[in-house]
Length: 276
Ligand SMILES: NC(=O)c1ccc[n+]([C@@H]2O[C@H](COP(=O)([O-])OP(=O)(O)OC[C@H]3O[C@@H](n4cnc5c(N)ncnc54)[C@H](OP(=O)(O)O)[C@@H]3O)[C@@H](O)[C@H]2O)c1
Image (cartoon, rainbow, N blue to C red; front, side):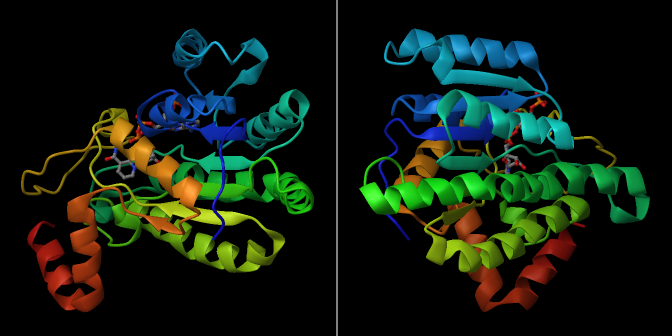
């Protein structure tokens, strides 16, 4: 757990065309971070780049790079990393944020839905991390020697459903729970190399996530609950990156659910089955 300064850090954020990733890019631009923005919607990324450059005269065209493509594609992930190396000379912060959901009972699922959800939410984040590790280790060595710049960190956007599996979101819960297992293992493996790992578990956040789901054949009828804004989540993530936190749950009722699940998993199972 290392406290870090984010000023001028070299950052990759996946899933930056909307929601939490977009808000995080705007927040990190306030620290003059150099950013690689990536998602499939090119015009959204161009708009975001223009907004960042208009709001911060310290950053220039070269400081904000765009890579358009599907993060589940090996070549796109490589291009994202190579862009950071070519344009910024390396990488300090990797934010694996791109994600997509599906709402429906598992008994109605098909292999295609399962593979898409696992590919985008889990495998792409793990693979992006694997190819980026050598650059993050270089950044850690440089930081150890000079004590200047940004101590490296990897952030993963998981979900409350990565801590408590929820009905109608079985594959999504599986993917996000997978991220929790992976990040805990990775954190232990790379701590001594000087790279931190943050796992973020948002609760209901007002983004395009619910419109972008790849299937909506059924949904749990949860009690009404107020979403937080992506700007709020982004501010909390930045705070956690600076502090070197291991875990962040930026949603009050999400934290309550996690505590309940720890002390009384049987009760939480009963509650979940009411909504199935
Ligand atoms: N909103 C919530 O309530 C909530 C709760 C818990 C966790 N989360 C997690 O938070 C993260 C961000 O989601 P959000 O709420 O900000 O939703 P969002 O507004 O829908 O943003 C999702 C981002 O991921 C990108 N993306 C999706 N599939 C992609 C693919 N195959 N290749 C490349 N990029 C892809 C989207 O860009 P393109 O469509 O342009 O490719 C978009 O930029 C996700 O990991 C999500 O699971 C959200």
